[in-house]
Length: 450
Image (cartoon, rainbow, N blue to C red; front, side):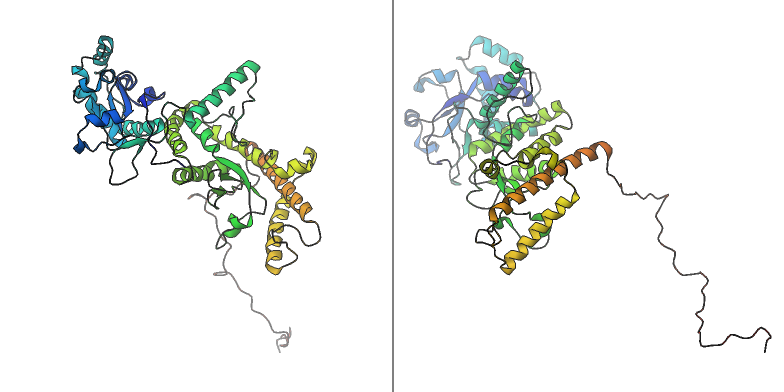
């Protein structure tokens, strides 16, 4: 976790690499060539009034041309100190409108370009404002957490690479290596076992998946209550967990039952968790917020189907490949693919029955050990391996079934009802002729009419 009381100094331009996609051309030019952020140092404190409220380490924005002048020769109005990161956009507009045209230190070429770009319209206000906030966070800016103190500060060195920059570097190296080898696979290493730099996905999703690690379902993950049968999994079932807080508590642990739920529900839950996780570094949260803007463009470029294919790869790495599993590594025993191809619906029933029997044995004390493994007959290790193999085979079967359904469709599609063809129930007994029940003890009348 970051030290909020530490004073970090730095001076960099406001420009970021994605500016030209989300803000106007004039704002891109100003952020890159005419404006910069800076931190207040001890020499600057001597020139400020005591009633100004400016403190050591506070961040401001200023004219980059006037910054080259001595402190006592800088004109008034060359710098602003935003009260929050949401006010940076407005203060930058004030500096652009009130100072740049009258500044004598700006080079002639830069001022000419500035005047020629003033006629271009800006982007949509809502999108522009949010991008200014997230790009400022990506630079390392944050509000003071003290509610009584206004202003912004630096929580990291702005000259160093951010998590988004490191992720971009990994993916660029993987892309260059794949071009040299003539293959789509690359050997560039990643921090995560589940996601790889050569995967076809957005930069936002790539960084998000780097913040999770594989895990196994354990007793403490059982939640009980109504609907627990559908939520809980068999012990040892693979899942994903937040790498920042999962070792401290049971929050941030997810066990999706299929690749579709992994890409839909679990991905959204992970994003929400990273935003509110107190142990996730602020620089990671800022990079995720910044890359969310880029993701909106990358999704359009990649077209449809990338999300489903990507999370299917993640599902197979988690359940089928299982390169992260220490049990498979220690035993060195793997089943042949021919055995995995024989998986049927009975395997799903065996997994469910094993989970129910483990619950019953635990409740009645049928020889369970303290850690939940073994049946009291010296076969605890083999049972655990058997569960792993069953889960692995079930995942393989489900993956193949989903792929088959995508091509052929469901085997027994449900009939649909329309207004013109409504389904009818069985006919009732109204209006139908009834036959009276005759009593065998009453004699029938004779044919002679007696």
